[in-house]
Length: 598
Image 1 (cartoon, one colour):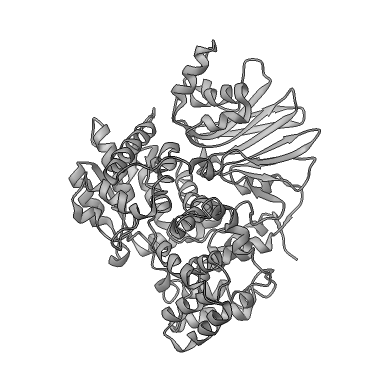
Image 2 (cartoon, rainbow, N blue to C red):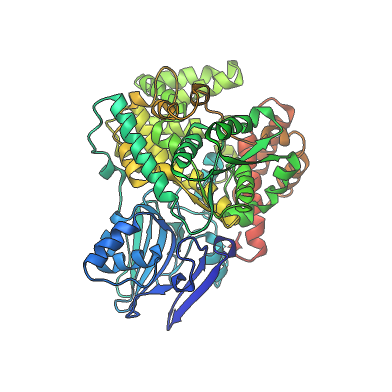
């Protein structure tokens, strides 16, 4: 875990309890703010990862009650708030965090994670007599006395989704604390789990009276969120992709900062995957100190082998590769970087929300009729066939899961030896709090609860922390999120455009030629790689011989996918990428004696 905290390491051990911490120093760089941190009595001990941005207000409240603080760190404020209010303190925090508080008097442990799951937290619940937890999975496995079993249904879900949905992990008996969740362990009573925050608690805000009023209020909230995240005792900058979200964050930083903001972009030799020219235009318009690195194919490919160490469990969002590169570039200049993550999920950035709305209308037809229509899809071109096949799905969440599937052309029942967790199992809780809303808002709620914390934020956290860089997310600010939940769908989807309200807001700061661009995004050309540069390693690592004893994959079905992709008859790059990363991780874990495979 050293890259997550290269500046200091601390351990506290007393009898049967041990806490460890690695520190990336951002606020109050003095040794007095290192962790584990205790209160003056020695009863309470805290280890904590993240930043709470409204600590000045919380500190003032406690100082007013007569408390004297010994440091300027947010860690001490978090500790004292938890001592005073217990788990109720979590609702006061505006920020990102994973924390553990040990009460030595009560022999009780509190584990908690921030609202939207920016910071990770894993816990081993297999043995009620021994509690192990960490920010990532590997430290827990390294602490185990015996190899552990795989969670095969979770890995089967990963093949479809490209990430492992919380609370599951790749390993049986080890769980992710969900976003907005807490777990308490007591020596007498064992585990108790709960959600300290639910999205529904933010859904009751009164919507603004007009679109212009909404723009003004949202602008004010984002400006304050950016201002909070520019509080730092070390240099900071911003990831600037050229997209709506990062450009808006950069514009607010430029308006607040007295010096040119440092911006960072990764470019690509593949024009269809490149947004660097747009980022350059935004940087020129806003007068930033711009830094750019063009990713060569060999640079991207070299990172593939690092995935098991960096991402810690199977994770197959291929855009993690440029995210790793931009994090390494940024860390050469600053220690903190703001980013635009969350804009798509909160403000309607994906076209499949509107596509899902169309399917929802068609689901009123009898399923027998829809299944009959879907069976005729074999006569259609591949893209049309997959769109038609979705009609056979039984409900909206299954349609949505099918649309988000890694490869719609794969027969997953033939590929995987075990059944995956159902989409209702993964998505149901998240969809429920907007059950009566516009279908597009309901699907956005699903992404806020699953795709955002389990894919987008995992990608950013592991990549930035691998570079010892702290990433901050203004659009995930508590007050911005609350406000986003109050907005009607019509203000996000307008005239065929996504994220309408953010586009109009950005047009206050940059030319409309930038704010009205279609969503693009930096991806990597894995479709081409698997037919060229990565064809040999793909066929080697996923060969029938290599998969002979694999507990998850059927070798023949995998061979069929590789053949179809290689011949160009179908595109399976995302599914094949997921399988390749899974096998890399499995080999890595087995070599270390962490995993037991039958």
